[in-house]
Image (tube, rainbow, N blue to C red; front, side, top):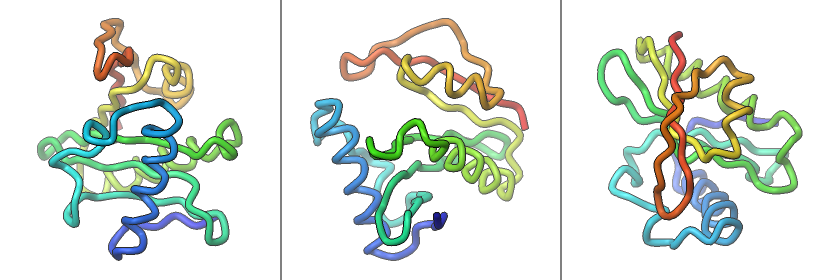
Length: 142
């Protein structure tokens, strides 16, 4: 498995391929809602490849000098439940630390709450709806 910090066009295409398959096709999130103003050439993405196959991705957003937000976390279906998500989040945390942040925020779909708790994220009890999907707020102090 290879972890790539996305810099090239083909890598960004792989990120979008994963997001379309996981979120748009897999969860019926409208395409126009899946992509936002934070996407584009300046967005910070990690891409996980299994040989040449794109299998997982996440976006890193620097909120301020002390805080980062990990967004658009997704793993293709055939790789879910196999530790790929853990590898992805841990790699994102390493990258965030390089920017000197002290706290990471993840807003997550409710069904992933236990996954983030297993990675020492604190889940706040308020649930919000985004695109009719229940979302919880999690954070971790580094």
